[in-house]
Figure 1 (tube, chains in turn cyan, yellow):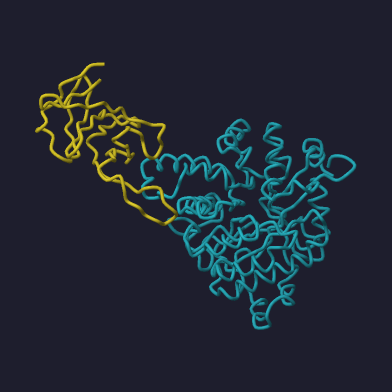
Figure 2: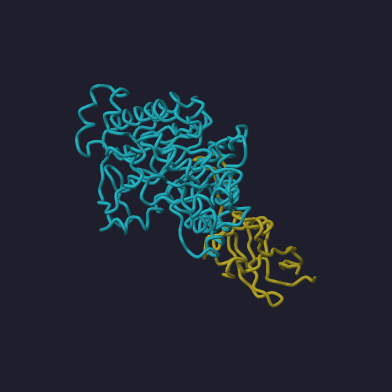
Length: 371
Length: 116
């Protein structure tokens, strides 16, 4: 065990919830038992399932997190448990999956079939292996009606806590054609997670608002514009007035953009409220009540500035810890949480997520002492 | 508090907002055809000349994607950032903690009198 893992043991006595833990397939063949035969040939064709625009010099998944035998990182639950859950004393890990970018595929039926098969694979091969794993239902957003059917198909599974899709999309998520997804989330008492990915890929608009950047560095610096766009749209269109119990998590967008957007929205609301008369309170109030944000990839200013930023966005209510294991830009618990004062650390490490996912009735700390 | 003789009744047309110096302050006198209003000509946001904005209506609270127009002739819109003020009580509709000063108006001997 490394030094950072030892430190996390002493400082996170109340438990630790990882809100972005990626499981994946050993190969696309894993999906075949769960997919109609008609789609099988596509699975083995290069880039026929996940359209990709930009070359990433550092591979998405950490080479050192491979379970061995040439298997992809995150493809073996037994290895992932030791390599991440045990190492960092993670009490619960919300599985956020892979293949999220099927929402960028040009064929809505194929995308829905891939998402559905992946969900079955997760529930069969990951969830039963450890009580610490919680599941997300992956949906493809091209056809919100199909997405809603998938949510209804699996939404009552006791380990499913949320619905997940990419934050990138062809149209802003506040628009009414996406409402079947929100209705299904509410009907099944599930959180909606919007996770980075698919920006500029396939059918999606460009990575930036001014076109396609030249490098992955340039792309990665501004990924949060997609989170900003969706949050802005969802609030302005009155989604939280229409669906008052809906909660939305913004995953892998970092944090520092949130105060900026809240301030701008509140400022503009004073003068432009008449365009959105359905908003009954300031935009930031909807955000604080209905939205949560995961830490990774955490911005890295000095600690004083980081804590100021946490305070500005009401992190004691809105921020939840995430590793993004086993992806290349993952954060360890100690790297993020040791920067925070105790009151914030407790909320971010554990309590905000436990409240959001309604885990409070279930013990998150193993008997026999703190994790 | 005292009454200031602001302007003659016939000098403010319906729908017009006449800006006058009263008691050392810039005040807009507005006439809606039935009633006169006196409003301080300073937006509490960035001190723009508020009364140079238009008087109109606005959208009333509604369900998402429902548009109900109302308060016609009761909303003063700042020409700078579009803040809307209810001319009856001076409160900013977008954030009622902001307020522009309004004054009581009376008519005496065909003169518009402003209490301030």
